[in-house]
Image 1 (spheres, rainbow, N blue to C red):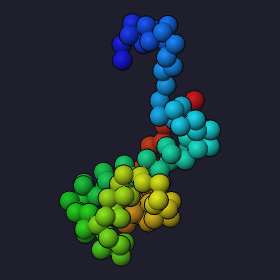
Image 2: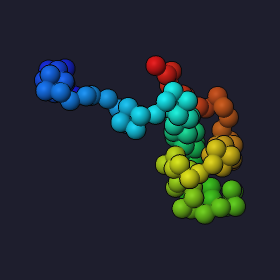
Image 3: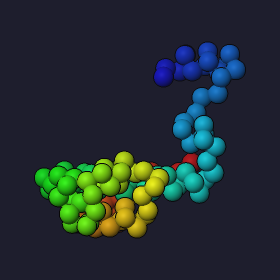
Image 4: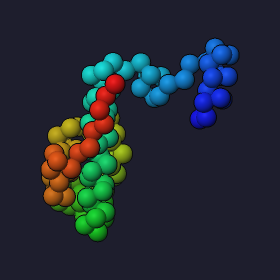
Length: 103
């Protein structure tokens, strides 16, 4: 959004923020969301780089294709354990995670 439009909206009483602001997440919750998203993005990136389908990764994990899709989406109902198992199954490591610095 351009700065002029943002200032006009703020002058009209609107608050501009991100999803975390809207959801009123505390710092710990924000960092957890960032970690989940970093792991899920790394799993997808490494899976695609290896020319694996979601079904092939699911077989490695002894899981289902729909579960791999949820891993890659960073779904809240996927445990961190499964997220990391997915990462390690595609040859990833903690060094593959790029978690942005929080505010």
